[in-house]
Length: 294
Image (cartoon, rainbow, N blue to C red; front, side, top):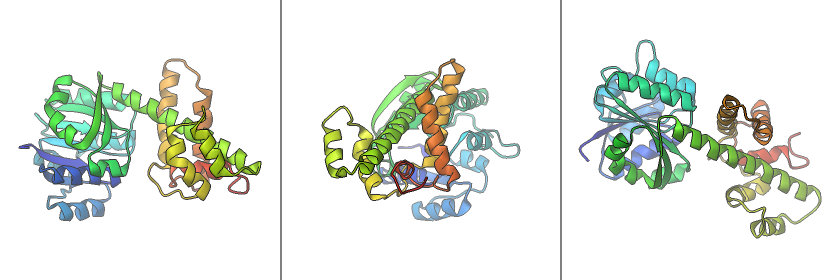
């Protein structure tokens, strides 16, 4: 546990990952966020620094986790004009957990290697509570020797892990996971919406779904929220649109048409346009239940 650890991007996921490692006895030396009050509040809680620059974050730690929102944010923290994480980064290990495109992961990997640092993908398929409890599921890619080196840290954060392969490959797998999840969520919302319009008891419908080919993980996690219109955000509609869009870009790059994914993207983008992008992905039911949003 001799490594000093820092976090860049300390929203609900990143902050809970930092808390988890602090609880496990690791030294969290610095936290950084584009919304500075979030970083300073967490720094006060953890008893660590909240540097004003990314270069200071790199200087303060051996392992730097990044948990940012999109490709533009990754570009900013690693390739910013006047301040970025790769300044004096020789020997540092960056573990990048955001769901972003495979291409940006490959760019970061190459840039880190150029300055004598290491970049590892650690794509997450879990929720905020899993981050706090050390029960993430991680898909990892990059250099396997680097993965092995940081495995003791990753084991404290995750209930299971899968090393996928070369740079960009974990991001591809994560995009596939979220694409299928989002399609399943949209399909469930349509099934429940139609059942409601036909006057069926939705408790009965959910029980029947659970015992038949209509069963799915999202039936367990989202169906009750869809019926009750409780869409507290665990994974936002806006992020669903972004992640399914990453999968669409991957499909386009190999000349594959994915009509179900494109239709799902349209639904989540409609939520964003209606001002519902901050709702949980279960909020897609607001578009499919009669008498809710058109």
